[in-house]
Amino acid sequence: MNKKSTLASFLALIALLMYSYPFCFSDQKVLNPTTYAEKGYLTYDVKPMGSKIRPLIMRTFAPSLEINREFVLPNHSRGTKSPKYSPSSGKESTNFYEPIDGVPATIAVNLGQTLSYVWDTTECRLLYAWTDGFLDMKNYWGDRESGRRRGFGYVPRLYGFVFYKAQGIHPLHLDGSSISKREAPRFKGYSLGPDRLPTFDYEVGKSRISVKVEPGPSVQTLSILFSTSDNEKMKFQSPNTQVQVIEETAKSLHIVIRPNAGERFSSEVKKEVILKPTIEIGESLYTSLGCIACHSLDGGKNHGPTLKGSYGAKREFLESPVTLVDDAYIRESIEKPTAKTVKGYLKGMMPPYKLQPAEYDSLILFIKSVR
Image 1 (cartoon, one colour):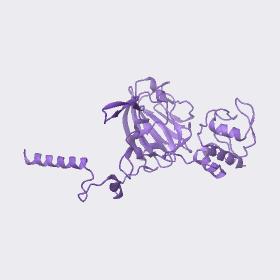
Image 2 (cartoon, helix red, strand yellow):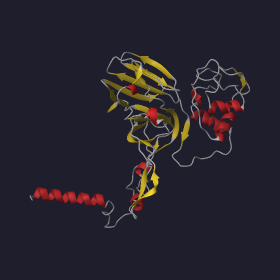
Image 3 (tube, helix red, strand yellow):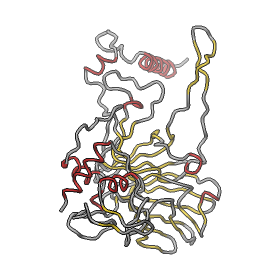
Image 4 (cartoon, helix red, strand yellow):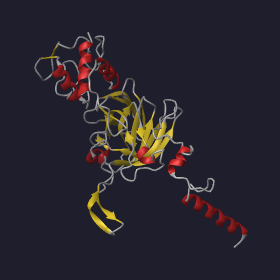
């Protein structure tokens, strides 16, 4: 063995020892993970955030958020439950592990509080979008105090307000049919423009498609630009989703989509319970839930009826009898907005919201106060 081979073998042995015993090269003492964290060696943030001028882009597992796997995730493999194994007895248990409830190989993008979204590289489509947060990576990366991640169920927790969720088969249609009816899409990667936002590229058959997602013109809207290598006519069509076409050419499609969901998530296991409804909480929800984007406070007409002087007034609907705006009507409109559609407005514009009882009551108090 020559000198170079001997040196290489020695360095490889040192690297192996350092990998196997990561805490043993400090004052000849073995450091436990807690001490390791206390000395400041663990510098990562389990709640990373980007910004508008410097978006954060991560390849990661993502929570499924109960998305319909049959239609939205048809090209993903499906795990099955497996029996637990006992090392002491060497036998399989009668108890089972359930598959991890997460979507692998996604790309999560964060632009600060303004917008976060998850792109699925298997289905080549936007899975969901939210504001006011990003991903809590503690389950996946490990607690900074211990340096250890969760052993099972290590999917990151989403926190923030989800306003868009994928529904139905692939929403992009080429020459009149969804690309779901063609062969499975093949993700080719993404590139970054001058604004550091990713443009995702994938292929379906001989067509190469590029997609760029940006914040829309108003709160909780999405601006999406599609382009294709062929002259196939593109259309975006998804259940319960309002789509506005901004520009359409032979090889591109620019759209703005409005909310089709409304649910707040916390990175903590337990959500703080609001015990007493107040006008102040209602006003805060009016802004954070995106109500401000469609319902004015000054009588101005928008995508939804104004809130000014609405309480106690009569409402005429497309398919329902005239109703007074009272507590019950407001609660129904928040929980089941498609139950009644006010004349002069498009049906299905507002998504349903899952809130705490006191949050519904707070919004009602706030609407009563808008005169």
